[in-house]
Amino acid sequence: MYYPSMPSLIDKLKKGHLYTYWVESKRVNGKPRIVEQVYLGRRDRVLEEIKKAYTRGSTPGPTPLRQLQHREFGASAWLWHWAGRLGLVQTIDRHVPPVEAKRRTQLTVGEYLVLAAINRVIDPRSKRAFYEYWYRDSVLARLCPAKEGELTSQRFWDHMNQVQPEHLESIQKDLVARLGELFALGEDTILYDATNYFTFIDTFNERSELAQRGWNKQKRTDLRQLSLALFEDERTGLPLYHQCYAGDRPDVSQFETAWQAMVKTWIGGLRRRPEQLTLVFDKGNGSKVNLARLEDGKVRYVGAIPGHWVPDLLEVSLGDYRKLELPGSRHVKGHRLRQEFWGKPRTLLVVFSPSFYRKQRAVMNRQQAKVEGRLAELAKAIQQWTKDRRGKGYSEESVRRQIGEWTGRDHLRDYFAMELVTDDKGKVIGLTWSWDRGRKRTVQRTYLGKTVLVTDHEDWEDAQIVMAYRKLWKAERLFRISKDGPWWPMCHWTDSKVRVHAFYCYLALLLLAILHRHLEDAGINLSVDRCVDRLKALQETLVIYTNGASERVLSERDPLQDQLFQALGLGPIAEQLGTTTLPSA
Image (cartoon, rainbow, N blue to C red; front, side, top):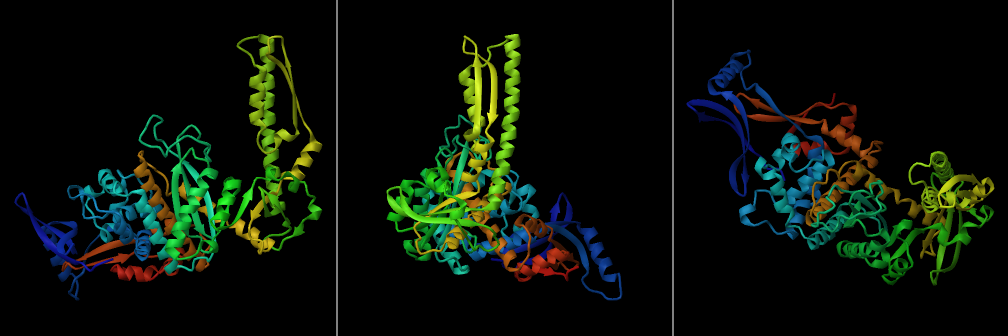
């Protein structure tokens, strides 16, 4: 909360000379304290400027002495305001004990983590660069004042060390309850998705069990990685719960642990029953055990499964499909049936999308062209070795393994054929291959453009099932945002700090999701990245008058900034924080 301050001019004696400073005082922990000071110059020079200011014109009175201290206002003030509305600082401090007295600062654990979350939204920095390259030039330097020594890496670590996994669970439960008070959260549908982030944690660092090697979605299999599960409210797009887990743990194995923790938080925070919850998930999380556990826990579900699990359904002719009436979609068809699946009658829906079909076909053709080029290079190399007989040559096993890896994607293997010619030593001396065009067309008609959904919602219409599944793009959007900004840099290498890093990155995503909701409600078609950039350009300028009084003035706004200013309610926020706003340009 912002408290009124008392600005004044004071003199300091240094080496026999008097120097004048403008200072601002506030009550901190019930005691008056100087929280900000600005050097104006030697006392005699300042007095001369004041004298000239009062005798310059025919209307005596305080005139601006100097304009100093330009600070970023728009993004920081709005995010700090919403952190306050969510009660983030108070919620964290309620569950996390303070650090020991000898390491304690005037900032609480909650304030450290909220500052870190806001920094992740605006200008992600390492803790070493936090103060110098961001904090001191942000309005947060006066809204949440701290000395440079209090924002070092060590001070952050001291406070991050206080946060334990059980604290994060309690905080998220309270936060879900607060979100339910502020927003009209959906009654039932929750979106689930998971991703991973590569790290630069050393291979031989034994202090982290979370960072492990695994299949990385950004193709960095040479690095250790972390995984993150995220649950999002389908109606509002707000992330409700996150869980950080080991990078080598398959998503399908983590799924049960994640949703059980989410349901516990959801029920405890919103006071709802588990049977009210419908969980929507992608095909990387479906399994016989997971579906059975969801049904045992009375949680409804809509999920995707790989098509090769039900090949008989994919072979059904498109003539047996019926058109689905979906908003904004044309020519989408579905084939629904109820049959025995994994030992129990379940509802299956195969969805065919022409646009998805064209996209997959283009990917298949591009991948085939890429493999064709690699095969040509390999055949040329084999031919050259056969002629020169230099080196070890190419064994049949290695060639088959290599080509198998190349053709293992996008169903290429289903219509690819090759022949190898070997010598008496088992070395490959000839390679030929072909693509069966007829078989390719069959593969395309059978597999491409189709998504297989499974659900226990027998009462839902086909279109309702498909629309629920298609909302997963919201969770995927949040992950893209996190990888473009909030998550990086991740300069921690112990599990305790990695979990806290994931937590304040989750808070950053929550604040960005709230920002996105405001933009949608105002009808502003603007990405959150672009919005934050324009808000960062709104600067606050400190104007000091000759009588010691001061005024903070917000910079002029261009048309887009003024639109954001109105839509986000920055006028009342600026007024509450004691900042004067000028008319828009």
